[in-house]
Length: 454
Ligand SMILES: *Cc1c(COP(=O)(O)O)cnc(C)c1O
Image (tube, rainbow, N blue to C red; front, side, top):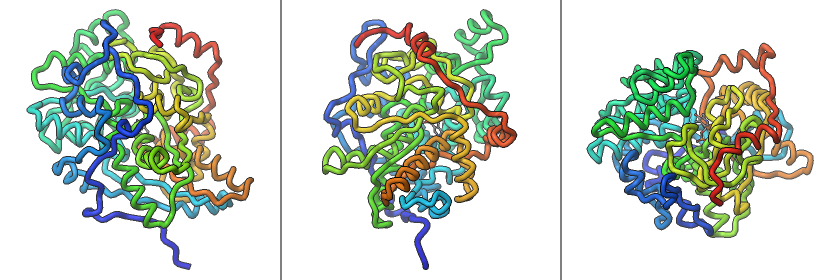
């Protein structure tokens, strides 16, 4: 029997607009607030650190469709469309009646979905006369994507990488340098913020908080330099909708429509990317697709956090965002899915959870690697530790289908490959990984210091 495994769009079939779900949401997200005045932020406030176009997109609750600039589409064509794949071998291994599809965002040269937003962010910076971009990166996927996109548009990139991650994952710094970026371990002596931290604590291993502080300082003290962010914010999720918009067309080629859409969850950009275009049909056309965001049990903001205004960073420099949060000084366990260790969820997602348009599930670390191993051995792709959470949630749903004898259609996003995370797989195979349980007390402690505005 000949059955189709992959569904691919031709270049001339790529979507030419992103989908802005804010325009269709019944309850709009609450506005971000200036932490000093507690007044809603304007696009102009945001454009002191971000480029102007992304600052506008961030707060746009009017336009459902936003044109993808021609120059961005040209760069998307270097690696898009990405394949929609039917996971026949995984289905067989699970002996499930479910039809499992995945959107493979690991096929681009950088290996994760982050490039989908790095390209437009650098393009808008270039168009607005910016010459330098800066950012922070933890495990390094975002830094790598930004370094590539900066080189494509002739911008200089300065990346602050968490010092300890830089030592643990040296290859991602090598990738960034190959694309011409200047990579600095954070905390560093190159900024006021970094010097202060090192003076207080000479052996500080660095954190996303220290790296964000340094990158924002560089952006605000360097002429023609903008700060960029790889997740959490609305404009990042907007750019990622290219994933779901392609998937919508590809599912049509397969003659199916998803009953369940699943993605892993760090700040929400790959989840929003695959989910929002389908959620549009729940809002507007009465579809009843279920949306599931898979987070680590050790960082459970969606399932155990509170909905409150909180800072985006540890140091408390960013605007206050209304979100499900574990508290901005929450210190997650050092799990291998580095991209999922963020304390809060984006503001769109947080509103959607409040409105019961989607829900989260939390998954223990060992279950995620077990899922990743099965996926590697059936479908032949070694998934990023982050993506393993989506696979584990998919397997749970497929097993439910088996128990209930239901032939549901499940679509998940494979956000990246794990080829630079093989230490994590080695640790799993050697039996050196463990689950981290978080008590209610732990969570209450880190929630103590958030501002109580709502
Ligand atoms: C960064 C990253 C994530 C988490 O970020 P989101 O914004 O939640 O998508 C997930 N998977 C991979 C491979 C990543 O690099």
